[in-house]
Image 1 (cartoon, rainbow, N blue to C red):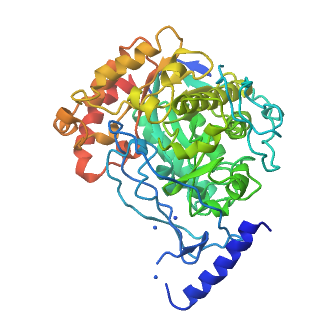
Image 2: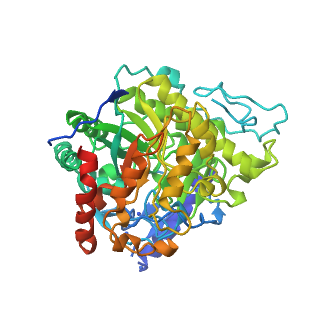
Length: 537
């Protein structure tokens, strides 16, 4: 037992005594219309009553500044065994609002759900001395690289070369008519549900999508360093049973893929490569997984806590190899039609996030260091996908604001758009109206289209259905645009269709189309009536 764990157990015993005394979370097809969270006591990672996990409800815009946070490095305080709480709730901290939360532009909505109890690499890469050869992405080492401290004796995940090439011919469309289905939307039909219940629930989702002409779904399969499928690299997601690491007894991903393909719907596996567990969940991650090992031995370096979440540090090749292996696993073992990532890159501009790695590198610019790390990660994922199913797609849904991507998230979207070996398409979240003072839709979509000119890659704008009928707080002159107009999405689809590199559109998200809040129900109906013909024709 490590010193950290011995100290932890002592602390747990002391804490229990306090509680006891009373103190009391690609096949390219032509498009055709279809017919078709003393109360909650968490001591050293052990839940004594209940934990909180909460799926979020509100989706912030991307027009504000990326949040700069204080990074904290904490030692692992986990029990030697996981103790299940009698009741579990899912809750997300106030800083989490959705997968679009990086800009923190809009307030979060606290909603608690009860869960049933049951290629062109950077010049310098930070590498450790005992690391085996590269497994996925061929890299170039810098001769001026500074030495790293002697690492612990853990190894890099198995080479993706051990994973077979998938002969499945991916189902993808010339014009994507897509919708995002994020983890919070999977909760009602997945968490604690049986195989048949999931099949029925996801089937209903897909049928609703078909009624609107949707031909492609982007489904969250790895939201927090966990997997909604059987993985050798990541633990079972808490969104399967309510408990991280617990096998639901069947493979949800297989079911979701089968039901999609049975309806002619393309299934894109959406993952968050860097964002990991909520701090209350991290102690329960088995050390049979690399993220569990790094949490136990390399927290604050390979894996870093920012606010209430742990994040992987892409400065290390071991980390980006893990991420690439995860992408390869999805494409090799499942008939997914592509792998898709969004705008969760660096979670903070705070220089302490990766100070150890940066100090050990040959870089003089922290910004360039981070940009190159993200580019290496993206190239690694692209290579992994193409190596295991050349017909599957890989794309990035970055923030709509190009400058924010580069200066706040360290995502070199211009490089990925213009150079080969990074993406097949870009799906920027252009969540702005036409009257937005800072980022008007027409200007932004043209900017992205120009970056893709002559590359053979496609532009698939993400559109903000979630804003219909609501006040757009950060839009300046366009503050009330989504209230006063009923054909914004229709006009945005038409404008997107007229871009030179048009490849479709993606709507955010399922809930806001088919289960809108009653306060905006009529507005959503009117918008849908206006844009539906464009998707069903």
